[in-house]
Amino acid sequence: MLHRPRRNRKSQVIRDMVQEHHLQASNFIFPLFIIDGNAKKTEVASMPGIFRYSIDELLREVESCMNLGLKAFDLFPNIEESLKDKTASESLNEKGLYLRAIKEVKAHFPEACVVTDVAMDPYSSDGHDGFVENGEIVNDKTLKILADMAVAHAKAGADIVAPSDMMDGRVQYIREALDAEGFTQVSIMSYTAKYASAFYGPFRDALESAPKFGDKKTYQMNPANQREALIEATLDSQEGADFLMVKPALAYLDVIKLLKDNFDLPIAAYNVSGEYAMVKAAAQKGWLNEEKATVEKLMGIKRAGADVILTYHAKEVLKNKWI
Ligand code: PBG
Image 1 (cartoon, rainbow, N blue to C red):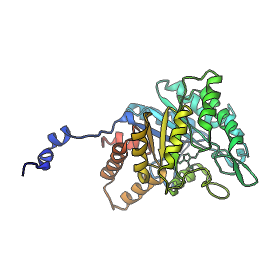
Image 2 (image 1 turned 60 degrees about the vertical axis):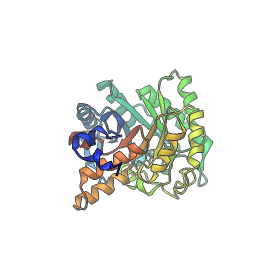
Image 3 (image 1 turned 180 degrees about the vertical axis):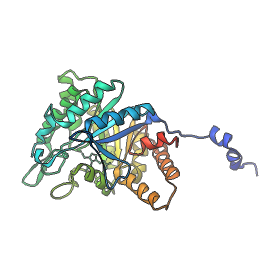
């Protein structure tokens, strides 16, 4: 035999030498759930180890992440039911939970990168990502709401706004609104290929944001489609996105690879709540090795082509020195 590939696997030093992909703290964005109140830290039942934090607790959590080298955060609010309405108006309340949280994090940790979720669903009495009229999600009326929200986030100090709604034309609409207000340096991380997925279940528990009727199939993509992601990615890049995101990650590794191969923008992948819950539940039952399974799946996402990974595992991976 002239070729024995096993020679390059014969020792740890050689295996490390020829390792093709690496996970680093700088690749991660850590999603954090926030809730109104003080000294509150409530665990999400379907996401062991993940909590909803009141702002004071959030600052403590951000600090401990920063000390581990984890410096990018995506914030998601749990909004009290009584504050929800058709137009998500609470999202523009400067004294409201979300805008205060952004300001506080940036005031205490100016070097942290704050990513904000531009979406109606946590604030919508319909639980949808768009404005609802006669049971329909109305695209163009949603755009203004999203743009106002993005500008409010930018004013509060957001470094990156991330529209997660899947309305048509929203990236350009948001870009123009940000620029008109002087926020030319605020980036847009677009949820480009966001699928209508069962894996968002635990997230909707965390935020109590499940749709009040119907599903999200008229705006989120059909899990059976791959080429359609190219249409979305083409539009988002033309409209001025700075990052293209694929979501979920694990069932869509082919889509991550497809976008990586066809576009020059950085690719983000969202390792979503259900993907976190699966590993946690199996590990709790002793059915798989949590450390190895977690690192393996994150490596798979990286190998597929993700430059940036949004993952609920980020902190534990760094804290436990799994990478
Ligand atoms: C909605 C939004 C969702 C997630 C992020 N933003 C859920 C949905 O579309 O219903 C899911 C994230 C996760 O499951 O971890 N704007």
